[in-house]
Length: 114
Image (cartoon, rainbow, N blue to C red; front, side, top):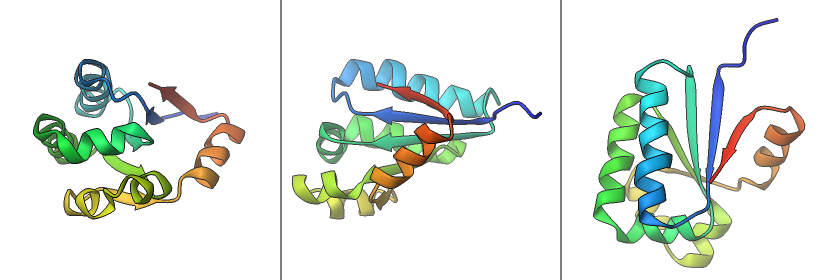
């Protein structure tokens, strides 16, 4: 049996310090240091608004993307908060995450929820 090598970070906490010092610090280093082969940060809820408004967070997203971290956002949240176009402009994948998240949980994939 092979060791799991894919990590998902479900990011729902819009606290700036938590975002900077956990989500991006760990997410970027996990990819850069090869702790995980694949790292995906999922923007969900209030974090979509934070991303749309905060230049520092936008720069952290660009850094993460440049390291190979996949960034994706919940389309339902982005649409309801009116930020879908901004997320698209930041090259963030915007999809409906309900079913994929359910599958991640059912498959016992590695998921950190922040």
